[in-house]
Amino acid sequence: MGIKKTIIASLLVLGFSVPGEDDLVIRKIFDAALNEGHAYENLRDLCKNVGNRLTGSHGDTLAVLWSEKKLKEIGCENVLLQPFTTNHWVRGYGDYGKIVLENEEKAIQLLSLGSSVGTGDKGIRAKVIEIDSWDDLKSRGKKVEGKIVFYNRPMNPKNVNTFESYGQSVDQRSKGASEAAKYGAVAALVRSMTLANDHNAHTGNMNYEDGVKRIPGLAISTADADFLHEKLQSEKSLEIELYSYCKNLGTVETNNVMGEIRGSTFPDEIIVVGAHLDSWDVGEGAHDDGAGVVHAMEVLNLFRQIGYKPRHTIRCVLFMNEENGVGGGVTYARVAEEKGEKHIAAVESDAGGFTPRGFHVDGLDGKAQKAYSRLSSWSPLFTPYNLHYFKQSYAGTDIGPLKKNGTALFGLIPDSQRYFDYHHTMVDVFEAVNKRELELGCGSMASLVYLIDKYGIE
Image 1 (cartoon, rainbow, N blue to C red):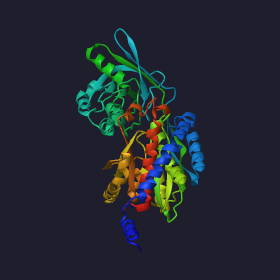
Image 2: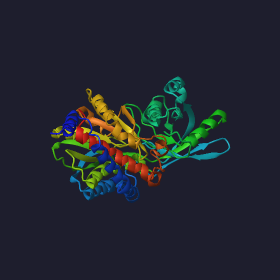
Image 3: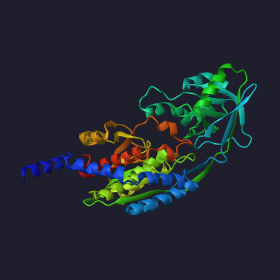
Image 4: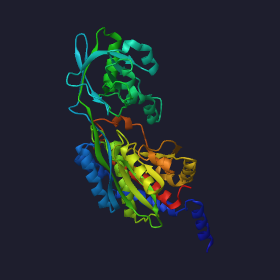
């Protein structure tokens, strides 16, 4: 064996990338994604011909059929549906609210939060009390009784990572109604989770605490939240009138959708690439998570296009019910464990179709550190594509349940500055996604999967 071949063989055994060879393959992946990719048109089709896709809705059914068809068109093997039963919530006729002032009334932009109860046909009309922290709520005590609690703690604009700001504020949405109900409130109104100042209300899921009275929870647009805050400083008489018709309908059956390319060397070792197929029932679910859906599908399509035959089985999993239950992710991990399947890695896209910046890494028992070290060793291969941000942190909701099975988890990190302008709103539509940024995400995901497939993460 020549010196060059000996060096390359040694690098492969040690798990290091081969200079030149991997550069060329990754260049082919990006060339295909940017010049011959199907992601943008697939996203258009999903958004415009399927639309929003809340679990249990007609859109849910259409999305499952659409995904099954697309995976077959790509040439995936073992395309199948994985059924499961989960909660079924509907918005009903919609949401309406107005601020009733001493001399005028002003309509406000609202969206009921997922899992919330409705107000009923008679609606709710009550005085408002503004709250900016949990300590503030506690200190008000009996003053909360009979009122609508208005949570107005904004996302922190000082954080460069907007997901950090989201994490610091979203507890108002998730537990605000139950916390307010403990003090006798009749409804909870939550400032929308966004840094933008506009009239778009942002929905999202909430949770009720067992044993606490269930009261309606609704999100109010940031522009209307600011208006309400201002009026509460000066108006002697101010009430809000709310109407919402949402209901919890028990359970419903839905499906994850899967397709794969079988591995040539290790067919029983699986690399998952996934995203969530469901969306909220407003807008078209373009960034959240239609972009992730087409990212995941395109990984397999790009491998077919460049003629790459993976060593491990690459499985695309489109999870249902991420938004209001995570039933798809939990079911997939449970079934995988029952079958004794070996998942060496899982890669998720669920942060929008914006310009990719890098990857999160997660795992148990030192797995995250090993995966992070391997990912960092590939940095020279990612640098030409401006992929430079690698961090050990939470990698994704749907792949999260695989963590306990010993799987290394990776999450795509797109630039986050505009994501919460669209998140869970009417304006999360196809037109909000940039074609080139979306395609760069596809190339990034496929390149990572290629390197994991070739070198592993141990």
